[in-house]
Length: 297
Image 1: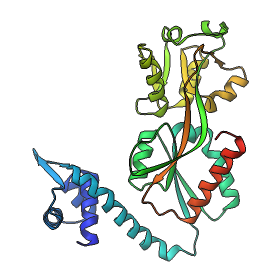
Image 2 (image 1 turned 180 degrees about the horizontal axis):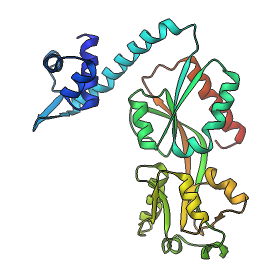
Image 3 (image 1 turned 45 degrees about the horizontal axis):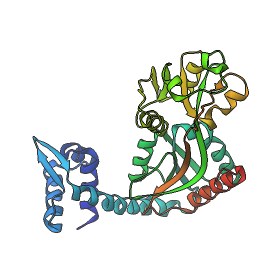
């Protein structure tokens, strides 16, 4: 099998369509279909199910994609990298939204100060999306919140944080020295969107105590939740890293729970088969040094 077959398979898998893959690759549709059929016949496996004029990757197709993607990606890196080995390097960094707000900017600045010739490209999405970008080789490595379970991802804890319940200083619960989670559940809750690491932790807290969780606000924006809490619209559940400055300035009050909030680790993740260029390795080392300096790991 050739690199051409791998390129075609990756395009079909990512587009979930023979037609769209053919259009993307500027190939005739029969040529794309033939390449997929040749792969299936050569390896004696079925890569896609054809149902109602649509295609769906089989379990073998999912596993084949992991290898094919990295074969194609490594060749692309070789092709594009050779002419530019002596020119400025580039680095692709992914980050979950919270870490992209409160941690990544200072890390990128420190890295650029010591590596002025390296161009850093940043992608900030929710944790679920960032994990997929690492799997699809769209970023070299990433900083995320919460646990990572995909077998193709290597995760290294680099920072410890905790979730806080915060509200306006004028909120009825803010005057109490201690509150319980059932007390907080009686008020409007301001939460991150489903799929985010912070939302998953909040859900585990409430469901473990058989408490209802029906947020008044759901947002991909941490700042929107912070502003809503400051305006007295409810109780936000957000990382301490993100709200600490607001608490110190007196614009938010942390509600002290009689039971401990969940601690969480922040992770540096990468694909186990990804070849990391030297700039990526040096950026990752900078992150480790930062965590040791802060004494958080």
